[in-house]
Image (cartoon, rainbow, N blue to C red):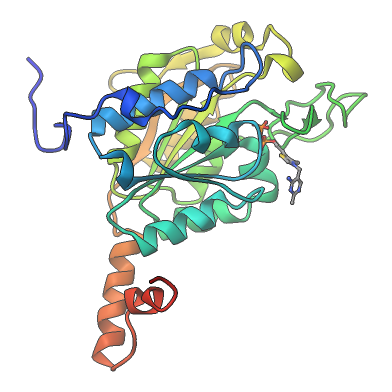
Length: 295
Ligand SMILES: Cc1ncc(C[n+]2csc(CCOP(=O)(O)OP(=O)(O)O)c2C)c(N)n1
């Protein structure tokens, strides 16, 4: 029998996945992995049980970054690479809200790559979902920071020369407090992982392998499927160095699962402490500063 505890019980059981689904119809290509990320996000939000009006989904620019439009929550399909700073601002201004940042490998590892470490070390209490298709999809097939060596793309007609970045390993190096990897072909695992990520008190990063059949070829899904392997049942999630080894395997396999988690003070908690110190010196608190900009 599954124990229902305060931590696992939905806050508001009246919300179902459809409560989080907007009326916009996704315009992703046929077979795009992102379809298989959207529904798990709706399911995870229903599972957590937050009301849709207390959720904000913030993205940058890209095919994957269209996701806020497909969620019946607050949202912002913002500026290329800027999902994390904007999501951080939302969380600081409205700490009671559940904030999800989402986007592609280009958005988060190229132009937005400078924001990722700082969101990690600040431990902003948001969930960051990266749909990694190893290519720039929206701009029609240029190499991205996660494109494998040798692969042909619009910008690498003789094969990509540069070593790909692994987003999960980077997150571990950036002191991210929850790091997981999923594959769009494993729907139940995605729902479970996104749910855990949203519930995690701190910055939670979910690296999702989400093939692009249009610019990476229709065999990519099968190719990834052949290499994935779930972390073993006795895997321990409290050892960052072991997590590195699990996330960056050298035997050609790709591990899926929660690599690492720890609980430590979040940005909002630290900002509250700072505010108290400022108040004691007769200065404005962070909320008072924000209130100068908001009616
Ligand atoms: C400042 C700026 N530079 C470049 C672009 C062009 N641009 C739009 S999306 C994108 C990359 C998209 O790739 P990714 O983030 O991986 O998302 P995907 O479309 O693959 O889901 C680029 C380079 C832009 N919109 N703004």
